[in-house]
Image (tube, rainbow, N blue to C red; front, side):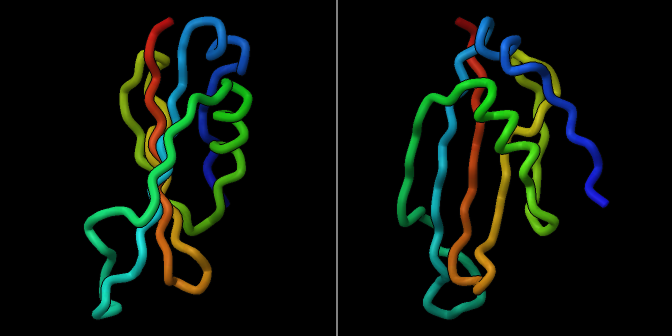
Length: 99
């Protein structure tokens, strides 16, 4: 069973912080034993508090979550997920800045 992840209300995030989401995609290395050191694709966008809460609440069992201290408190800041076929890895990073 997945432990409950603590988050704040979307209104709290939207009123005080700007949340930036960075998504990096990595392909398997040629040897097939690890991941390439440079991402294949990188996307950065600003998201709302509701989008952040949705991303955190829909984690899958195999996803790895890293916590960190942010302006909003001790929250999940990095999510790492590997595709079901094991050919691609996605890393989502969240940054909170004061408005």
